[in-house]
Amino acid sequence: MEETREETPQDLRNLALKVAGLLEEAGQHALHDQLNPRNLAQPSTENADRGPRYKLEVDNKIMRFMSARIADIAHFDGFWTTRPAESRPGQRYWYIGKIDGVINYVRRMSEWTVTAALFEFGPDNEPKPIIGIVHAPALGLTYLAARGAGAVRIHKTAVGEKRDKVVPSMTSSLDGSVLSYGMSFIPSESQRALDVASSLAGRPADIKRVGPVSLDLCKVADGTYDAYFEPMLHVWDIAGIAAGTVVVWEAQGTLSRWDGERIHWRHDNDVVASNRLIIRELQHYLQQYPWLDSINQR
Image 1 (tube, rainbow, N blue to C red):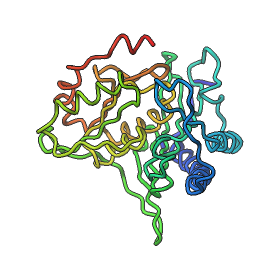
Image 2 (image 1 turned 180 degrees about the horizontal axis):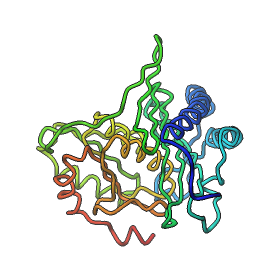
Image 3 (image 1 turned 45 degrees about the vertical axis):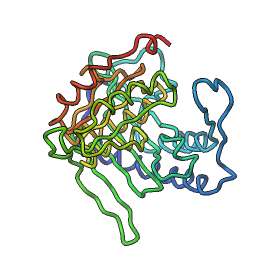
């Protein structure tokens, strides 16, 4: 594929809208399965010391549906999970995520999403997400963003569809802020999140714990939360992180690892997103609990 592309930000926005339509259709199938308890998976007993594992048939349905339909919309070079070992600048790969927020999904909560992100390899041969779509079927919400085209939130109601530009909050201090955090079900990983939340006590007005990562990132982008942090997001979380990241970027928020470095799209990450105004204050607390080598080497 040629490195140069004669496309505008609006072209990417239009592509994102088309893929969002497919994702919403896939999400309706997933929502139907969630509301039918017979279709919900039970946790596997494999590796019980590392927490519950869920194998959902609906994940396979989403992958089959999206893989079959997305190729009809626009040319791309393949899917992220089956890309070759080396890619050339300009090549693009879609990453279709499994259910993000699987425990919420299995427990029949509303906060779960289906996600899609388009990665492009840059001149430095490094991948970067340029389209992100996060759809929460049970909430009737879709967030989408494309490089250079801004971010939008689409809320479907009984009286029609409402679209809003996504912009972060203007909260300028941790004092009185509203934060969100995520944590693993693995004790050695989740302890970092709990330690940070405890150290923050008395400053934020509230610290939420709902999830999933893709939705938490979008809620930072739209000002619901002032910031979000989570340690040890794994490679299987990349689809949700990537989709939410584009929404944060295009809303003019910030997103990085806890130490301020960029996200690594092929490895585990600790993640922090904010409205830009409180990131330095928050990083002061995060950096008291650095990346654990024993975890990172697993």
